[in-house]
Each structure stands twice: as C-alpha cells, then as structure tokens.
Length: 393
Image (cartoon, rainbow, N blue to C red; front, side):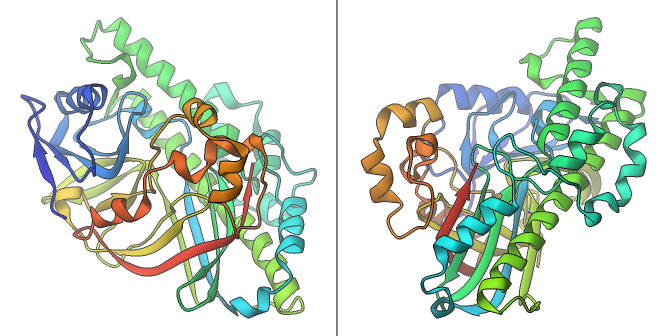
C-alpha cells in the first residue's frame, strides 16, 4: 500500500504507512520530530507505528548534521536473526519439550547472565575498544562479557518455527543488553544537559540532539556503533548455541549448513545515501529494506512471522516495519487478559503458560496480517513462519 502524507507539521512532511489513524499523542510526537530543523526531507512512519519516547516506535528519521540519541532508544542494536535449517517438521515429533529445556539451560533469559564466558565471546575483537567507551560504563566490562549470549526479557524471544513447506527455522530477538542500555542512558543525559545549557527550544526534552563535528557527537557515534556490533554478535552467539541444540536432537549432533541466514537490527542508526545525499538514518523500530536486503518481521508468540526481502522504496528510506506493534500497554494487557486467554492464544506452541508472560499475549499486539498488507510496496514475503516452540525471559 502506498503511503499517506499527513498534514501535521509546517516544517517537514510526515509520510505514513500506518494501518490506523494516529491519535492525538501520536500526532504530536510525529509533529515534534518533523519540526526539528535538521530533519531531512520527511519523516516516515511504518505500519506498526505506536507511542515511544521522544519519537514514535516505527519511525524512520533521516537527519543532516545531527542525531537524536533518544530516538535511537535505549536498546541499541535490538533486532532479529533467523536461520533456515535442512530439517523438516516430522523430525521434531516428540522432541519439542526437551529442545525447549535445553535452550533454557543453555541461554540465560531475563536479568540472568552466563556463569562462564565462552571462547568465542572472549575472542570478540571489539573488546579492545571497551576502554574508549563512555566513562559511565567503565566498570561494566565483566558484566557485558557475561551477558554476551543472553536473551533479556520483555518481548525478546527464541523460537523454533515451521514455514508453509514444513521447513524448520530458528529465530530469535534480542539487543545489546545492560551495556547498550547504560551507554544510551549516559549519552541521552549528556544531550539533555547540552540542550539545557544552550537553552534550546525543543518541542520535547527527549529530542535533545548532538551536532556533527562536536566531541559529544563523535563520542556517541563511536559508542553507538560499538553497541550495535555487540547486539549483532550477541545474537550470533545465542544462535550458534540454539543451532547446536537442534542439531543434537535432529542430526545426532552433526553440524549442518543453514540454507539461509538473516541478522538485522531494528533500533539503530547508520550513515546512508538517500535522494543523492548522505544522511544519518535512525530506525526506531524499523528494519532496513533496500533492494535485496533480507529482513525479519515477527508477529507475536502465537501468530505468524515473515522473512522478507526489501524493495528499496526511497520514500520509506528503504525501510519496513519491525513487527506487529503493540495494540495495548503491558499494564493494560495484564488487566485485559486471563491465563485462560493465554492458553487459548498459544495453543499448539511449546512455551511457558503462566501469568508472568501475560503482557506478551498475542492479543496485546496488532494483527500481523494487517501490518503486512500495509507494506506491499516496501517488501516482498520470502517465507511465512509459524512458531511451534517459544522461549521468553
């Protein structure tokens, strides 16, 4: 579906692929971002757009000579990875519960971390740059190394899925853990302090920004890239463990070659060229969808997910949605649904069935098919997946 141009700002236009009319708070948040003088051309809103902090989750913001750390967010580099395996559904018969137990034993979730640091983590090249990160995280190297290869909580998950041809897929969702959160917090506070000193007139204090060429910008950009690399490698470490577990149960422990691998961020910023100009592109809950870019758009823990290939639509800054998007807050979900609702909505999925994950019930999310229908001009579907096993923090 093509975008709609919203009449929100006197400054830059807002192009929306949303599957709903923006409410007053969402409109104001979009208007605030579009009014910033360094925003390039327009702001793009993805189909799963919803309220965030400073900027809407599901927004793509291209900027010239400036970047907004709170727009990138605190889970720097959060994203997805997926792997198509040379296995089929029949091979999973009677094995799902044991596979889930092995995953939960091998990959820490929630606030937990690894007891020992494995060799691949110790050998990660970027540890040598840790000393150059913000002084506020200098005591966190030990924690960061033990959290490398851990899932976290909230909407982060590990899933075993089947596609429509009954092929087995491995999929997981995670980010840069505590170290990414602390780095983001340190730099967001610096940006707010600078805005206060300069008496900057911002529509929202969470839109405090750094100007390129300054030491503060340089420090943030360095730490941002480091945290994004951490997040990507964190997913790689978990996926390697996940793959070995599945191979143990389906291939007698013999290593196998994946048929397709995808690893993509959906909370991050990078330099890109759009409309013949180099800009900083911040994707806050959005996936890069340039021509031939592979991406992952998950539903919820009881619905479909999609492996997609981008169409390179420059109106969206070559982006697409990062998931279904929340329909209601976590607090509202806990009040609105019961344990019986969770059991019904996750029927057929090997997963936790307790009130601790009620806020992640499928009914708390937008229908993924509606979200997908809104972005046929952004991506093509390569594979449609449905989970048979889900691990959450």
